[in-house]
Image 1: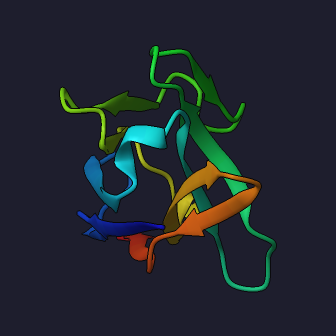
Image 2: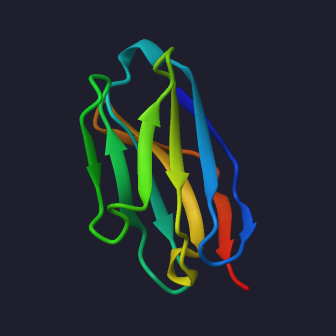
Amino acid sequence: QVHLVESGGGLVQPGGSLRLSCAASGSIFSINTMGWYRQAPGKERELVATITRGGSTNLADSVKGRFTISRGNVKNTVYLQMNSLKPEDTAVYYCDVPLWGLDYWGQGTQVTVSS
């Protein structure tokens, strides 16, 4: 079992920045990949970024050059640094850990980009 807790969402103006954090507990030594997804109202959940234990990253085209994903030193945390935010980035952001054929999800954190 893995339990995920996200933090760092909020309201920001276009062009602003936010940093999301996700901390995993439980069977953390089995975790390889951690990632972020987002879901906007009326849309399907979509991949934002993933990172492996070794540091390999994958980012959606829509966020390349603006978002950065990183892992903490103890490897059970993952961060999403979001810069140059746009209104279309508004969504609930979810932390994800794929493990043992399942996806473990956090509770989600709201990010709203609006003037």
